[in-house]
Length: 493
Image (cartoon, rainbow, N blue to C red; front, top):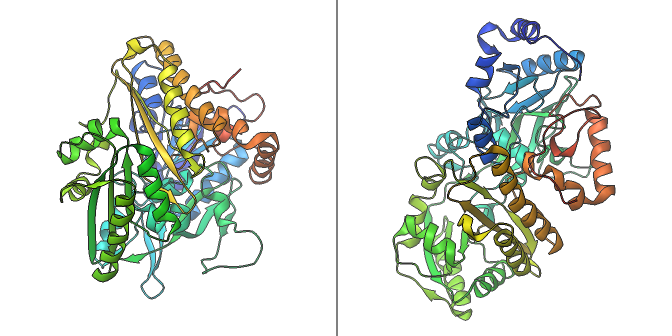
């Protein structure tokens, strides 16, 4: 990266976008404080913010995005794309300064094809707004992340995100059929939306999960579904988590597809789920929901689920628990119920196949607890909520009621827990992230996850698409020589 004058950069951007869509200096940082990660919050509280952008640019069209990137490429100024800033890994923080590319003004629905059930929508569209617009027409995106009120479509794509209905309808890569991407030099790539193709690699998926490092996704074509006419909920109490996992495995491998299947360990059921459902929960609990247009099919799948759970010794709980969770499913992710400083918190999401998932759960949760002195009063609560044909994921969340007053001491405590849990996941055969992305928190562990050859491949892809590291320098552990940024977590020695 070259040195640049922020005022001159802002003036050049104003010529492209107009002065009302460019911010610089302290106003650029105040209006865009960063994402929702604990790392972002705690740094800001201590006066060491991670949102280091010099300028914020707010384009309204793909052509304007391309013009901004052409300017940045010519000046070799860093660019960090951002949407709703709902991420929890620090990925959207402009830690190397430069331009924060705010895509929230790009919210048009360009095309809705009711016959093919596809829709082309711009990257800045907020997920909840998109879903509400579709619901009014009897349609659904079926991608319901917990962050739906703030998350943008582009952010979901960049993080390779997931939602509460993923077990039946898939994660974001299953929804995205094609993408419009602006490369670091300003070239605009229009990838086709087709049922499938055999014309070389699937280039769209190269950008799903790239966290802004390979190109700026400005629009996507996504698949839609009809809004289901029927939903059926049930809740089951298991004697232990292993029996619940086995019930989930049997459903997934026999073709039963609940839209929702959430299995809570004892701590999560009593201290998290109970707050939403008020049902006197006392141990491992599973909530399932089946949906569809034909009640006979919905009832049939629910009956198979009931038989499978009974076969694993589960007891069906009273009606209404699943519906209560559904009605409040987003409440606890937002203030005033979400955790706040001076707490330390982090949610991991680790995936594995069915053969390894129980060992991953044991190893990761044990590693978390053993990483810190018990005097900190840390809690660990885990649920499993995204299931696949041959595996699932765990969602362990740790919380410390009050961390150290000193920033570096608080970071060290947080880092120790994340490092222990991440290395335990790798050792047990898991993947260190299912759908929250890498961001700052997990970048130090990518080489251990991918191996040296895998990282060399990723670096070659980055070099081919962005040789000057204009886009998100340092993210995904793709740091150019001499580029500095404090790692969020230090890897193992």
